[in-house]
Image (cartoon, rainbow, N blue to C red):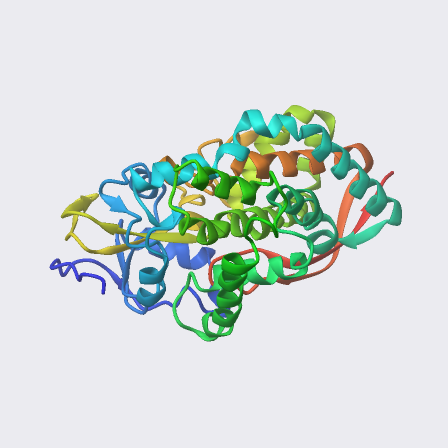
Length: 397
């Protein structure tokens, strides 16, 4: 249960951030929350939201006050079940788990797969552009995560087709117990059973990222019972978030052809374009934290035990931080955007995601003069935001 602050002057909002309408277009809601004050009580979820950039960033950088150890989702029961996994832990336990999990994802290890990534990106871009039209969400954005990255994780071919369903379900249980949450629970249980019985040595690729968890356990670096649930950390961040980020980026360039012209003329804009895309369309909308002691946020007193929602999607569009925040501008250079988080829990796969996005953008820029969106459909998910379908026609002139 969240602790209710004694202060009576905290604004209260009964908005359901997990309704279909809010998942499709949360930005007017975010602005309302930012305008209401530094802390707003979201009465439906029983959490206290931080929606402004400086407050969210400060919380992310202070794990000793804003703890992840009591989990980072919304539903109390799910939070209890997930305590102790990498995402839902604090140092020193978090540092130990993250140290093992992050070895194959370090920047130096990413350089080892750069050529393979580039070749795979060139192949899929050449094929799709040659066709002239494609679904940027499924045919383009899913390609690298579902082929090369899945191969590197090494969970085997048999269940690869289930990975996207499992990952989406895990994100759905990030939210409250609504229809999406309820529908997702059997899939989450199916994945956890797979991780415990199938994603084990002898059934996974020797030397793959998943197998390296068990190797670390054999060396005494982490308890063996942690290995199955740590598969969550390879499946969820490596799939949906990157797929949505790539799809969002194509949609943004389709809507802003002048920005695509800038990138095509000067590829040094690619990393800035990635940051700007992640800023303006953050795939992960929020995580929660629990206060370990009484604490003030911009003068608003909150007691120990308060569950606080950190709204990444709102912080990244905070006009207090970014002038004209609704404008997509790759010359903005927003390297301080919060889509990957910050601090102890900064996204462990961010270098991989940047590599995938950069490889695709560079090869698309070689071949495509314009993107024309012919159809799209938003994703409805409790933990993610973006497009699940984006039909585009490409012009190569």
